[in-house]
Image 1 (cartoon, rainbow, N blue to C red):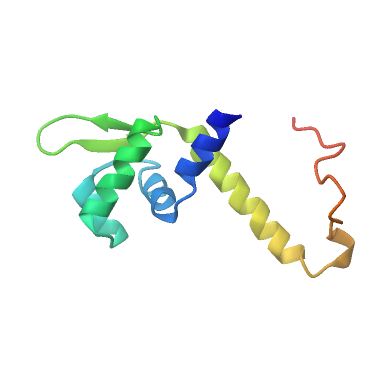
Image 2 (tube, rainbow, N blue to C red; image 1 turned 30 degrees about the horizontal axis):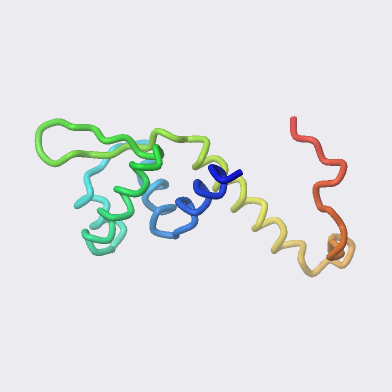
Length: 113
């Protein structure tokens, strides 16, 4: 469970999520990411370093500065699924029939296939 919590902490920052999305289908250097995200290069470098240490990004060495690419697609998939679920909940929030009481288990009887 601690590994899961640790991974969620790494994924829990909006800049890191944007970096993962930017690297979904390509590789990029830190300066390229900083320009694309409109964020300071030093901040992007720190986030990339953390994602790399967590095994979410892979470093690709070549000519010039190192590039990074996404290598943990399940983490991105998980974030996308959570975002989709939250959007759906937001759309149905005003419907009293979909509200879950505090003492109810929302996953009771749910199986994932």
